[in-house]
Amino acid sequence: DLIIMPKLMADEFDDAGNAAVNLEFSGKKFRIIFSNPQKKSYGQYKIEKAVCNEAEMNFEIETRACLEKEEIAKLDSKKLHTIQIYLV
View 1 (cartoon, rainbow, N blue to C red):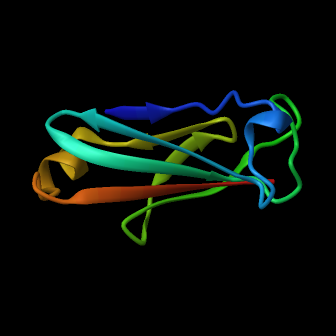
View 2 (cartoon, one colour; view 1 turned 30 degrees about the vertical axis):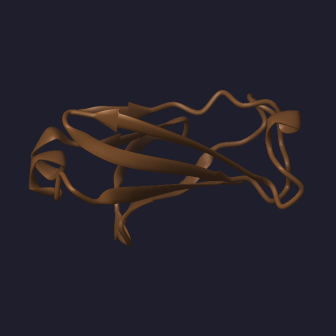
């Protein structure tokens, strides 16, 4: 499973309140975008919604999102997949 637990500080977000990282996990390429329009710091925000390629992801608690290995296996290895994490 790909577990995402954002711990970004307010100054790590750009002027629009976004921060992004590219990574490869389990043979798939991902771009993870954290959207934090209120520019809150770690400890002040929680995950409101998590989306991978427009499909909602599970998140067990407000600080951690999970893309399950079964879902990762279904993704095209040749494409860049976007995960959007919405913080409030």
